[in-house]
Amino acid sequence: MATRLAFLRAINLGAKRVFPKADILRVVTSVGFEDVATHINTGNVRFDTRMRSRPRIEATLEQAFASDRGFDVPTVTFSATEFADLAAEAQQINADHPGLARHYVYLLKEPLAVEQCAAVEATRTEHGRMLVRDRAAHALLTPGYQNGTVDPLGAARLLGVATNRNLNVIQTLAAKWC
Image (tube, rainbow, N blue to C red):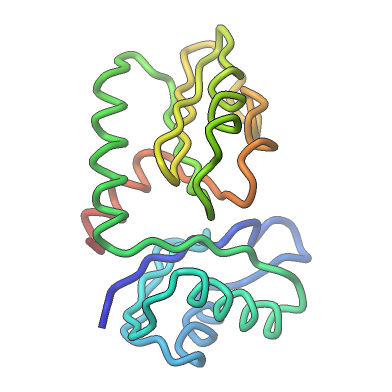
C-alpha cells in the first residue's frame, strides 16, 4: 500500500460547490482507498492505495466526486515521498527569499513545458514573482501586494489544472502525513 495525498480544486466556494469533509471521506473510501483522512475543509485528503498510476488514481477520484456531487472536482495527487520533497523544497525557497508577505504553492496536475515555465516566471512584478519547480509553482509575494487578490501576478491561467495552498498548509500536511 502506498500513501497518497490528494488536493481538490474549487470546492466549498459559494453555495453550489459544497463538498463537506465527511462526504469527501465517504466518497474516497467508497472507491476502495483506505485509511482516509482530511485536513480542514479545503480539499486536502490522505489515503492508502494499491493503485500505482497517478493518472488512474486521479481519474478514479474525479469520476467518483463528479458522480457524488454533480460537478467536476479536478484533483491533483502526490505520493507521500513526492509531497515531502515538495514541502522541503518550498521551505528552502522561502528561506532563500526573506521578507515575503505570502508564499503560495500551486500544485500542478502535470509538469509544465519549458515554454510554459518561462511564461509563468515572466509574470514577475513589483509585487512578487513565480518560480516553477516540477509540479509546483511558487507565488512569492512581497509586502504591498493586494491581499485578497486571487491571482496577484496573473500566472494562474498559465498553469493548467492546479490548486494552491499557502506555505503553512504545505508544511503542516508534510509534517502530519509524510
